[in-house]
Length: 142
Image (cartoon, rainbow, N blue to C red; front, side, top):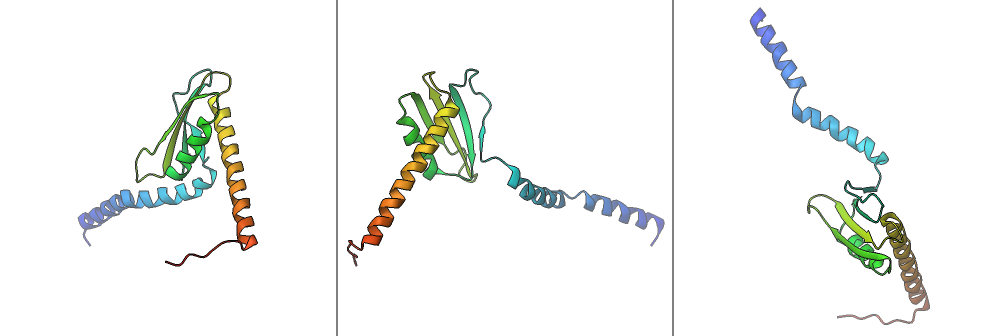
């Protein structure tokens, strides 16, 4: 190989070592390691200073949790508004907005909503288990 060819070969190796695809692979591996440390719920920028209004991002969730949680939070008489959205269908993120009348914070309303939803799920699971254990049901064959 001539000196020019060797130099071009080294340049090519340098270019290849800066390959964005390789960088993305490394970034994905680092993200997978960091995913264990990522919090499931975070407060998005723009929350009110007094804490009565805030938007939350919940990762790895969809309409199933969004609608159930919104319904539970709206049953709280201290909550003025609660709504959710899925910012983009290809991203597993749920945005939840809570506004209260001022007697509790949005974070407290979220905690109460999560606790109430967990309690409801426990009751439904217990009732279902009791019904199955009682063998007092009919099997419908279509």
